[in-house]
Image (tube, rainbow, N blue to C red; front, side):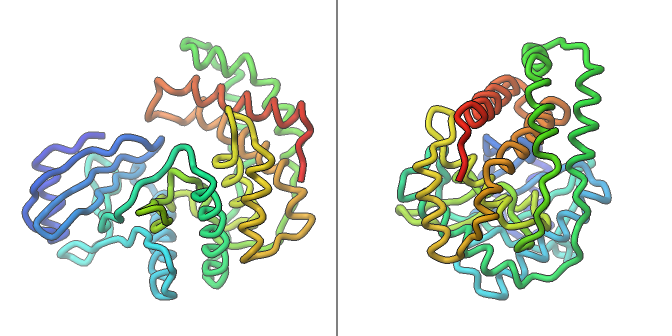
Length: 315
């Protein structure tokens, strides 16, 4: 979604950010749209999220409450803190989408984390879990199984037109089998509000040190091992395959701060497989941004899951 110069100036005025000097769209991200806004008062991020509906509004309110909670608790990493408009609002709507603004956090993310960055990532995740476990809010109903089943149903009715759709249907049986094996996962240990996308692309490094954590859009209540598993899947890989040596280093760093039980560790591989199924279905059914890269992302999930199953990787 593109913003016009007039819309950007209007946002700056509403949030009392001063005269606009420059604005640049940020590439990347599979759902939201972001702009760097530079004004006389500094640099800010304009974040444009999903269409305004009750579920998205509820999710954003939760995200803002968590940001406020972590700030009050002196969380040691910078996070996006929503600014308020001159009418004391954190959210506005433009073209049917929610928009909010926060002060830009200096630093860069990494698509291919170094050993040092990966260790810092594990440490930061453990620290986040340590802080967030004190946050109290109503638990959310987990509808992921229902969402995946609905997605598979839609795929079976699909008439493949694109290369990505043809590729997806070619591998649908593989992912349905994985889902049947992993959808019965039961775990309620150490539930807290997990980040859900804690990888090297959602943390910011400055002068070699992890400085900030961003993108809390998928925040929800779940066992912490889901966060650990997703982080390992997305950060500890080599040539698209899960690198067990890197994963063990990641766990070692995490456990310097917060110990995991044997049961939690046994669940890592099944959770990685389950979350990969969820991601596979989402790409096919719901992904709209970066549509040209759908086949690429689907291939990554096929390679990852096939390798895990064939090698029988486990902790």
